[in-house]
Image 1 (cartoon, rainbow, N blue to C red):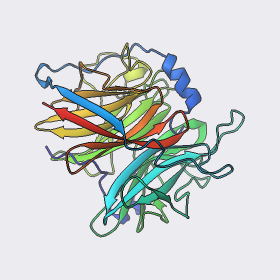
Image 2: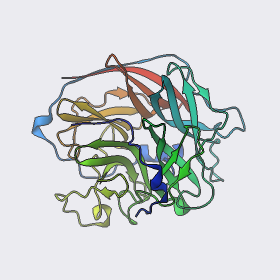
Image 3: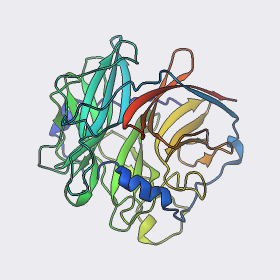
Image 4: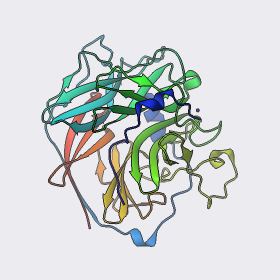
Length: 358
């Protein structure tokens, strides 16, 4: 199994190709989702995926590694969904941000960029936001949730969530010759919301794109508009352009909720009843390990095939009411850095984590 954490670069020529298509939940939404407990089918258990996990976490520093901008700036309300990669001996962070929440106004979300030599001290780009909605297309209102990669020739690829009319969100693709842009986007989305009434009819947020011997897999967070909690879905592609959502043949629920696709990790009855979303997929021997976020908690699930998952018996691995939108970056010594958004001051902090699987 070859699990790659970074998104897969696609050719610039894809921007000329046609494809078949609300930004992340706000914190008002988060409060609602924390109270919402939906009765959803759980992923199929697998008897042979038992795995012991030892986990420990500590803050790298007390202060945020990336703070909100000053009053009036585009990122003065919240910075969240950090995505970090290393390239040419430098750390690159892409993140989404917006102005302070205003219930009387729809505020656009845009994508920013920062650099660091050590992964701790960051400098925001003077060109921020480097990628934003232009009022046209499927992503006319907002762009968010960046997943970024760079190939050996210095071509940068970004998958992102684009929001258009009626608060519908699809997964878009953009490319650039430099991380600060300019970014050229594909006119049509790669993946779109489900039909009305389905479990992912309001949003599809790309969380991770990986490649294995069978092609490409996109793990994404989906949510249903009536208020059910966010859950984790899967889409597959042979070429990285045409995507098909996973539809569980064993699920005989004929309702519109799961008529066209099924989540691979559903909200639970306990600690993760408010949401299961923003997963990171890790590799351990021949198994797949998912580290995922609930509201204020971090949990794990294990799988033999990356499709059917069993939630780990020791969940949650971490409880912190302010912990949101984690991004895991593996270090050379086998430990992890976890960049996350702290709900208390809407800034990005950094944890050092030890995750041992045996």
